[in-house]
Amino acid sequence: MNKQNEQLLTRLFNLNLIQELPPSTGRSEPPWYLKALLAFTGWLAALFLLLSVVLGIGLEVILSNTVIILLIGMAFMGGALIMFFTITGDFFEHLALVLSLAGQVLTIFALVDIFEISPWSATVLLEIALIIIMPDFIHCVLSTLFAAIAMIFLLQYIFLCSIILFMAAWVWLNEFKFPKISKKMRAAGYGLILALISLKFFISIPQLLELLSYADNIIYSVSLYWSAEFITLAAALYVVLKLLKRHCIPFHGRGGILAIAVTLLLCAVSLKALGISYGIVIILLGFSASNRVLLGMGIISLLIYMSYYYYLLDTTLLVKAQILFITGIILLTGRWIMGCILSGREEIIDV
Image (cartoon, rainbow, N blue to C red):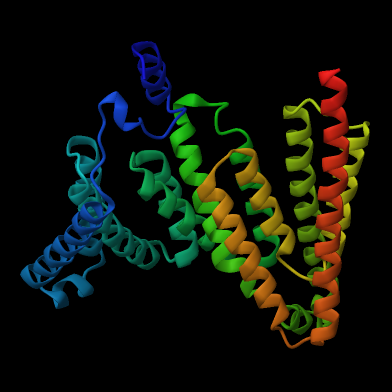
């Protein structure tokens, strides 16, 4: 690698447009087993430190005084913040991460007791503040994950999952639009996707029907369900339209019309198989960004959603197999037609 390329990579790294520099630019990374060992020792050291603090102050004194719990929690998070800014290394990074997690638990417990609010509300407020304050990438991922999960339980489970999908789509399609905060945006994007993978496949048709069995909640539950599906469709169309625009494919052309039609058809088929459209959208985001981690997360989420749906007991296996078969046929047919259209377009360009 010549000096000009090294300077270009260094500039992109300083602008947060790439996550790390290659080894040829002078930044050598330790092997993975050493990083894993340092992470393990950091967590172990943090656990012993927490145990010594509890034993030193006294468990009875801590639990009997909410103010002490709040002060200890804030002290842990403040110490983690100082370590993130002043000390480098995998050991200290994971040590600070554990201290911050312990401080978050203590702080949330104290806030719930002092202000008499729900733990989900306290978690959302605290994690949003930590996303802004903490500079560590892993910490931002976990804070976004915790905030998204708490928000889902705080408001409406089914409805918020679709909104989180739309938020994740916006983050990943605009990660380079704001270079100064692109690192935090990537962390938030990973956290939102992890929240969807962790929670979405727990929603089942029997749970929905149980909600609909109460006469007073029929209109409310049905409206929430269809609102969630509408937001999911909007998120899928948003991703497809942004990608068509990025690759200079006109919306009114054959390729654009076909892509939109396949998206609508897939969302219609996945109305019964909850979650499959989520996995497809995540795969599209990973493929468009050439992000192998995000692409792998999308494939894993799609497998989880399909497996979970296939083994539900609300419908017969034959009906489920038919729905999955139709979905696969739609994907393969769309892929074949798009390949034919794009190959013909390339021939025209070459001519």
